[in-house]
Image (cartoon, rainbow, N blue to C red; front, side):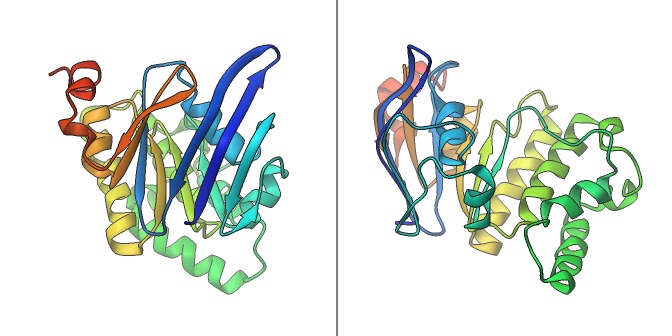
Length: 234
């Protein structure tokens, strides 16, 4: 397995946000995390990425422990997180944001090639290269933060609510690109997505989190009566 999380506990002070969660992701998979607001999904992703400390449990990436490593070191090992809320560096240009995505790399010729490749895949960003990121539309900013994360050449990409607040047409484009990352680039993806139906459609497998715990998991949760009633409106 590329990522193995075992019995992970995360707390905010005395409040337990993640309670003994265990998940795993194999190379080339899209794995979805679904569940209600406050279930611990974003906390789990941030802890894996090194942005929050784990109070107990283990996180292994490519067979090596990464629990409680600094976020920059986790990223250098090949794991990238796109945070919820389109976290562009708003006063910097699109080009500067993309360059920053590759700051830990030293292969400058390859960095330039990767930027050109991503601009080909997101042509609207090429048109906005010299524009400040904060002036982009919500959809354009989401494209930018995904492209910036890909500039680090991650082996595992974690996406936290990539469609949040976007119009349906833009949401479809973003999720189509996520699917393309798997089918065309064999990218391994851990996806938190507010639209459970779309997440389950994209994913090879999924976990359901409620109150900081995994309550369901499997490859065909869309047919599970509990998931259909609680998350798919069926």
